[in-house]
Length: 348
Image (cartoon, rainbow, N blue to C red; front, side, top):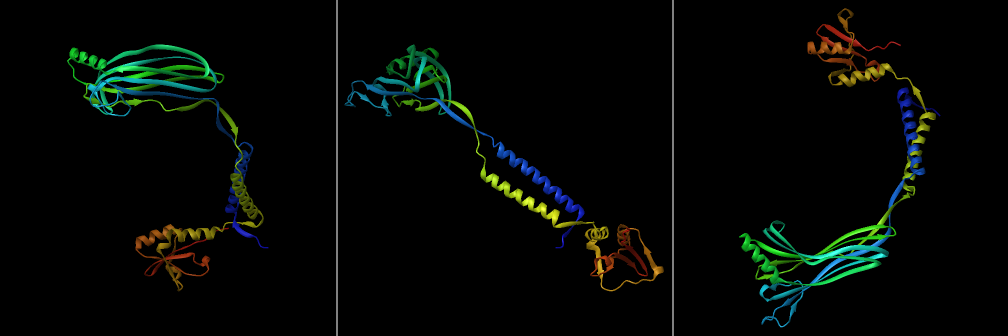
């Protein structure tokens, strides 16, 4: 069976390229198979839940409007009818196992005078009033909870606001925020947990009516975690695709080696192709022979020289067309009775 012929430089370059692709592919695929890498897995060592909450009930003064003594949450309250705001603050912690818990909690009321609206508030003055002094606690258990009930008298806060306004001669919007703040450390068999919690209610002051804004945390599930490196399973899809690609390269390499042979580049054909590629738009093919008298012919040394003459005389470059490409190698510029030509020749 006759082997296909490929120019020597192209064949050699193709073989080298296939061998390089094959080497790199085998190296990468082997590395992926032998060492696919690791994934980071977070393993919980100690799980726990925590939540701070606050609830309130508005106790009313005797009045002819309501036939009940108190109102529940999320309502509009008339200031002159409110006696107390009864609050219940709670914090709960539940661990997976026993822990040594130490911490403290307090309830603080902060009265503020401010200007602005929405998120653009500027505090003019601020006064902090301890409602429940700092209390320490220590417990060894997997659960603990704190529950404190406090009654906040609205008139007491309004009296403070009035006194500050009279002394400062500044009129501002005012509010009071009553919060229970909890701070604790829990030492477990798998590490230490540090937590803080704040639950609060916010009450506008000095108005004829108000609504209460409640802020409390959601029930949060967390854990002390350990990061473990788990070996990845080799990607069979990647191995299949890689193997298929390697197989294609191997087949191509075998075909190049055993089914083709190198042939030396034909310098004449190469140079003739370059002439037609570079000057093809200005070459005119003639069907008849060009036969000038020998004494009227002038041979030039290169195709570029013939192009210069064509440009100088404003004459086209012509040649006698033949189906045999090797015979299309003589080019002419004809200037009346003068003939200039370039003959492509390649010495062996």
